[in-house]
Image 1: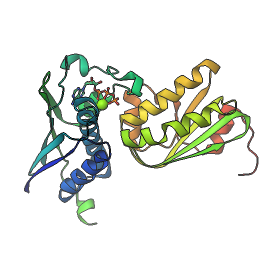
Image 2: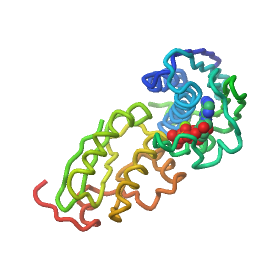
Image 3: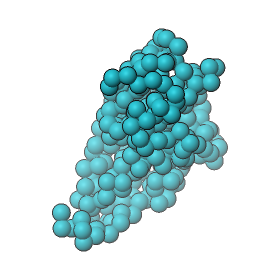
Amino acid sequence: MKNELTLSFLAIEENEALARMAMTCFITPLDPTLEEISEFKTIVSEAVTNAIIHGYECDGKSLVTIHATIEDRLIKMTVKDEGMGIFDVEQAMEPMFTTKPQMERSGMGFTIMESFADCIRVDSTLGAGTIVTFEKNFSPVTEVSRMR
Amino acid sequence: MATITQLENGIVLITLAGELDNHEANQIRTEVSTAIFTGKTRAIIWDLYKLGFMDSAGIGLILGRMRDLAPVNGETLILNPSPTMEKIFQFSGLSAVIRKCTVEEAIDEIGGVVHEK
Ligand SMILES: Nc1ncnc2c1ncn2[C@@H]1O[C@H](COP(=O)(O)OP(=O)(O)OP(=O)(O)O)[C@@H](O)[C@H]1O
Ligand SMILES: [Mg+2]
């Protein structure tokens, strides 16, 4: 199957749930397993939350944009903000690294995204914004689930 | 959503439901913190059997409360996470406090007294 989606929304926390819901609907035709769905939702949630709270510091007026394609059973997704950018991407991706410990961030977002996606790339420019790119292959539909 | 119950012997039971993301964590953080600072909390049991989704915000919330309890050497147990949540806890070094058991069994482990349910 082939499909494509672009979704832009304001940098407010309420939109974290909206993004998860929209992206879950987008992958539903692939008949993913429950675990694939929840891992994919987690990836979306981490990336979108980062864009909202770090990229834009919840400014409530800038836009976060998700672009995603499905080709056969491969989903490619980018989550983009035009916010403050990341000072040092390599450091930001280390487990437990956070610039907002006072907000009870654990610094686990990138570690979770890396583990749940097949691959992840982070392109960021200070003062210009961040694009996080993911790929995830969904497992072939089994006979059992086809009979449902 | 968080349902908070003060059990005997300073054990606080927090049953989470719905989706625990950054937005939700910010909604419930004050309520949870207040409950812990009222009374002599020495252990927190997080029951996740009703929780449909959790991301790193859940880790921040739970680690934050573990820090609150550190001065009294308080205990934390996390019950019944989904397979995906369990992975997230593993990445965050929290495997040791995960249990698949009932609240009563968790209370037993901590060493509290269960009266009527
Ligand atoms: N879109 C972004 N724009 C600017 N900075 C970002 C962005 N995404 C991540 N960062 C930076 O990278 C750091 C690490 O991100 P990561 O998601 O791993 O942890 P966190 O968001 O701080 O905490 P957690 O995700 O565990 O709640 C952040 O603290 C922030 O400094
Ligand atoms: Mg994050």
